[in-house]
Length: 169
Image 1 (cartoon, rainbow, N blue to C red):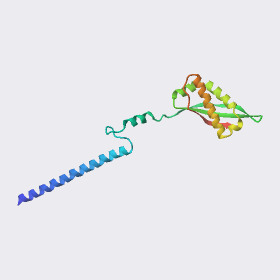
Image 2: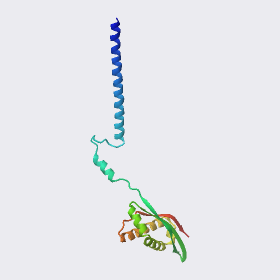
Image 3: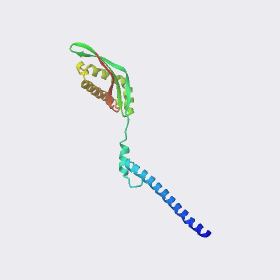
Image 4: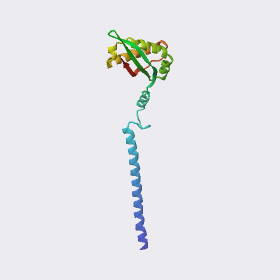
């Protein structure tokens, strides 16, 4: 009888071991499928699984390029004519560009740029400077002026002229 008891316990241990191995395999499979599903859902693609490599190359080419800014420290101050009266305009500016070479060129040619910008500001109408549309127009004219100066010097163009402070009185 002792032999019968030993033979009955051995198959029960073998069945439990098989059950544990199958549970571990199912858990590992669930984890792998979860990771693969997450990567697919997030659009990361899976290398070597037939992912579209052409789209990844195009996305890398269209990467985000942050803008850099250079403030013009001294204010542009000039007189503006308004119905026979003399008014004053004071403007603090900053230049924006995605190419750092354009900003370094603007700093190099800053005396010429300031001179041209003062003339643009002085030729503006006082009533136009009081409206948001007039200020946007002034910013566009200033951008055109700055880019013309940089083009004459053979330098890259800036992206935008920004007002840091704008006072008319």
